[in-house]
Length: 414
Ligand SMILES: Cc1cc2nc3c(=O)[nH]c(=O)nc-3n(C[C@H](O)[C@H](O)[C@H](O)COP(=O)(O)OP(=O)(O)OC[C@H]3O[C@@H](n4cnc5c(N)ncnc54)[C@H](O)[C@@H]3O)c2cc1C
Image (cartoon, rainbow, N blue to C red; front, side, top):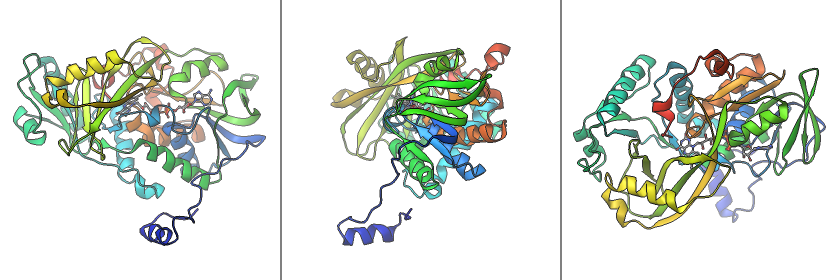
C-alpha cells in the first residue's frame, strides 16, 4: 500500500488524481480464517488492527452486514474524553485517548484528532459535588482534569450564558486534552491498515448464525455462505443481544436509539466541546462551521436509525437557556444510531459461555472515544485469553454483582 504524504498529494495533483489505489480490497470470503470479527464499526476494525499489529494474527475476516463505519461509528458526535469516575473506566478510556493522539501517524491516515478541550457543565449543587469528586479521582488515576469556576468557563466559552433562570452555570469539569476526531476517518484508517495486512473486509454480508461443536466455535453462517474459524469477536453494538441469541445465551443489554443533529454552518464561535448533562444537551462546532448537537437516548427500546422532531425540540430547548444564540440557528439535518446500554452503563469485553467466542459491546452512548483502547484490549483478550484493561469488564460481573457504576459519567453523556 502506498503511503499518503504531502509528496503523494502533489504527485497526484500533477496527474489529475488518476494514480490513487483503492484504500481497501473488497474480496469474496475464504473458506476458513483463524479469526472472524463480526461488525466493521470502529471497535471491530480496531480489534482486527491490533490483532495484526500487536500479535501478528492476520488471517482475519471482518464481516459487515452493511457498509463499514455505517453503524454508530459513522453516526456519532465524535466526543473524546477520559474523565470517568471508576478506575477501570479511566484506564481504558485514557489508553484510548492516548492512542488518538498519535493515530494519524500510526495509521498514516488523517483522522483529524482535535484536542480542543471538553467541558462538562455543573448546573446543580449535586453536579458540582459529583464533578469535584471526579476531578479528585482523575488526579489519582493520572487523567488530567480540573474543576473550574464559572468565570473561567466564560473565558473559555464567551458565547455561554452563565445566569440561566433555571440552571445557572456553577462551574465545570474541564479536560483540556479531550476533543474530537473525524469518525469516518477512524473507520477508514483502520480498514485501510487491516486490508494492507492481508485481512479481508467483507461488506454487505450478514452473520445469521454461530456454528459450534461441543460448546466450541467452529464457524459462522452468513448471507454469503458458511465460513469456518477458530475464534469469533462479536462487535455489533446495538445488535449484541441478537448475536448472543444466535450463540444461545442472553445479555443484560437494552438497545435504544440515540439521536443527533447539526445546524447550518456559521462562523467560528466555540472552540471546545460543551456538555450540559442536567438539561441534556451538548454541542461542538465542526470544521465546516456546523454546530453539532446531541442529547439523550430515546425513552423506549427501539432499533430506529432515524431522527424525530420531538428530539430536536427537546434538545434545542434544553440548550437555549445556556446558549441563547442557538435560538437563531437553522437546523440542517438529524439522524439516529442504535446504541447498546448495560445496567451499570459500562461496556462488556469478555469471554462468553461459548468457547472461542468473545464479545465487545455495551459502549452505549459513549464508545467512539474508546475505539483504540477497546480494540487494543479486545485483541489482547482474544490472542492471550486475558487483558488487564478488560478484566473488570467481563460479562460475568452481572452474575457476581461487581458492577462498574458509571451512570454519572456515561448515563447521559457521550
Ligand atoms: C447519535 C450518536 C452520538 C454519539 N456520540 C458519541 C460521542 O460523542 N462520543 C462517543 O464516544 N460516542 C458516541 N456515540 C456512541 C458511539 O458511536 C458508539 O459507542 C460506537 O461507535 C460503537 O462502535 P461499534 O464499532 O461498537 O459499533 P458500530 O459502529 O455500530 O458497528 C457495529 C457494526 O456491526 C454491524 N452488524 C450488526 N449485526 C451484524 C451481523 N449480524 N452481521 C454482520 N454485521 C453486523 C453493523 O452493521 C455495524 O456496522 C454516539 C452514538 C450515537 C448514535
